[in-house]
Image 1 (cartoon, rainbow, N blue to C red):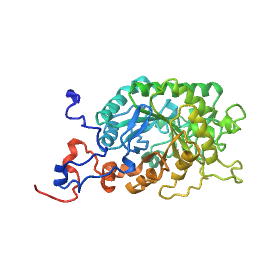
Image 2 (image 1 turned 90 degrees about the vertical axis):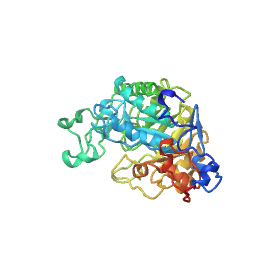
Image 3 (image 1 turned 45 degrees about the vertical axis):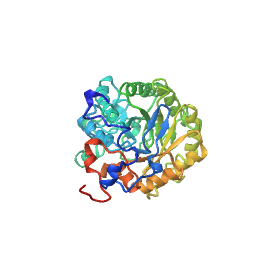
Image 4 (image 1 turned 135 degrees about the vertical axis):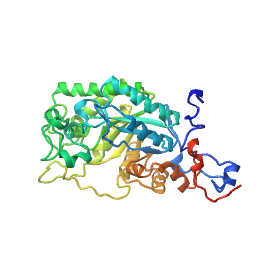
Length: 410
């Protein structure tokens, strides 16, 4: 234990690790007796990183940055999950370029000055024996919008007077997301190369900030996804048309990132496994499909990608999503079933411990990403252990707040 950090650093393998209760803890009512470790709390080793359990915090935009800088908000927000037993935290989408932000208030990693605060956040996570990653992103044609709580004030699109960049929005083709979105400028080959270089430079900064895991955002209609989907990619050059051409931007970006991201550190890609858009009069091509995602996962496995984070949708307002608890889990299962060399993660409306444990126990995914449920219940992971009749290590500062199975004054 670091003596200079004695009061912060956690003992053992950190909060959220399942351990056996001591006789004293059983006597005091914190456990009924020896316990077994549920699948959700089995560790997962990926390259040189070992996650203490299978619960991951999904990257969620907080719209709380200025000029891309992480702030004290990010330290407190992220730090609470490092304390509360999450196996892997993925920080929100960090733009690789200023014009790659979704809103003027989004996190960035496009300049070296961003590193200092990010490194403070990773240091706190590591003090609590929690693995932490960051998602690299470029919003593409969905950039220059306003934060959700500013839409009522300024409208959905961020104009120049509100810090936006409507004239610098880019995409694979001049195809806006909707008739109310900015018209993107079609990217030149030189711009494609520049953006790929920016992803690689951002990966180098993530390495210097001591992140354990890197995730590329290839979902939800943002730049990488917009190259994959025929809805948004109407190019006739080497980056459009055929499946091999539409995946080229992502594959080349992964290669560029791997030149800066060490081979002993895990690399994830979040994909929209389907656009949920069938061929129609409005969209004759239909959208990106599950079959294409599975084929892409095979390619990415050869490019040293370790895990596909299986989300869906975001390419079209015409999408028809069959929302239900765990509705995206079958896509994670499909990756595991069809691409044995690739790990998969399930995400989307996963909100309780038994559901999450069942996903891992059944072999449908290797990791479970939890999003909004964590915003509602920051103690999700520690509570999940209790709900699954397991005994998880608590942060030592919070140990006296652990729920009891019985009350004793001994």
